[in-house]
Image (cartoon, rainbow, N blue to C red; front, side, top):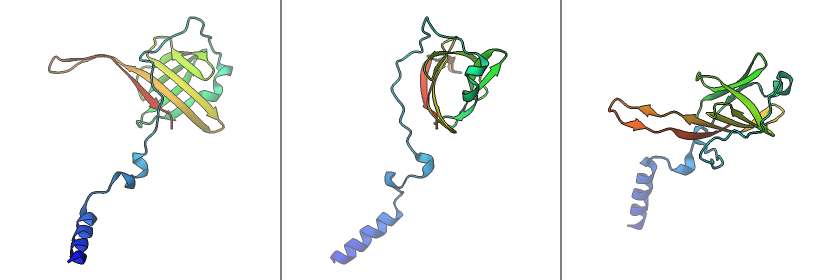
Length: 144
């Protein structure tokens, strides 16, 4: 009788959906550090010249699948996520860049062809079709 019960339990377990232990590579969790709750632009930031940021220009995949792009226009450095509006950014510390409009912050560390860091961005308030207002929120994504 015990063998029959064991066979029934094993049979049922074979038909159950996979558990968390059987995650695919697409389900990988990417840890990010806690946010301060707002993006600050220090009083003493420094303007970067094109020669200073040649090594960080390019596209970076974020943990949510979006793409961060850092480009130069004239003597300015700009960053944007997907096809959103570009934000002029300045260096506020070692490997840290903040948009002058305080809508985007990038912490980027490059080691050869590898990059790591975080992107903090403000999602502006929205009004839904029902008339409900969704307030502004701050999102943080890791670079992969």
